Length: 408
Image 1 (cartoon, helix red, strand yellow):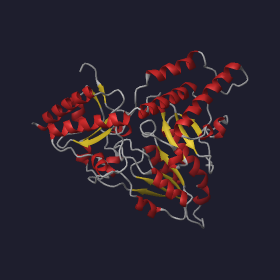
Image 2: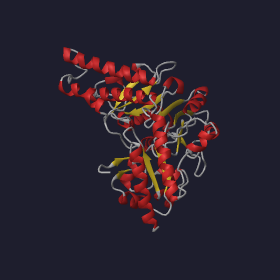
Image 3: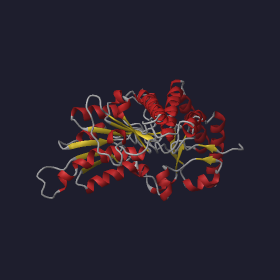
Image 4: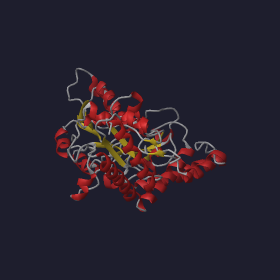
């Protein structure tokens, strides 16, 4: 093929042309500050934000006042965790405290923005349990054990943060079941749904979560804008703002609203939901299966990192993995060598964060992979633009490169 094929949709997605069209007027005509409600153009911008907020709220099945706009999921995760947990820390930080430290539960496979936030909490006096995930080669690898999660809860457990869909291995955690347990114990639950929103149906009412993070650039919206769902129905979750100076967004996150980004995110999410309704999940699953079949036909066994979707479908389990995700090992090869051999394929060895530091992703390490297994792994992320023709060509190119590297 003459053009490169993009297979890294977990890292980011291209902005849908319809999203760009929706955003353009906010740069050229409706460019006023939505907080400048003293004049007509400011009021106009405020109404545009209000309408976009309603679209996003409807998509997630929540109220508009339960949405806080951020610069992306990393900030949303920080706001959720620090905003709820830091105010509780000082009361427990003294060495003379007479009660147990507040306790938090998370998983070893979380995004660094969650894990690093949790490490800061530990320094503030919080007690932390980092749950292991089911190791490779189980067909449920990457999931947490619900029984183990329940057993980790203590009387002083105040907060839980478990990712909905993993950014490296695509595993979908049983968030609704986790929420049920948290609700019984009056524990606040946050989920990083960055890889889930726009890829699978996400209903905050059915999930019954308290806090949910998302970002536009994972579902064909612009970079630099995201959101945090903060529950206000049934019970109200109080957060302490991490960015102050102006009292915007009900004092939860100060700063001039990114009108263009918010419009783009609302438009992108609406399109994503339409695509899901029209069978996009099934289409991507078929492409993923086709790619994996062709690779294994030519190369032999390629161990799957994370839950094996084929087994779960056979026994009638719920969806355990994103349809767009294929993460597998290419025994006898190094991921950098493979990627260098196929420059026309844009894919990755893991998360963009890990790629910057040239180290195996912590998710693969948490799966129990040794250094060689991790270094032989590739993450392939399919998207709306990928076609059967592209998948077939990618399978041919990857297979040829691996066979050459193996000396076949």
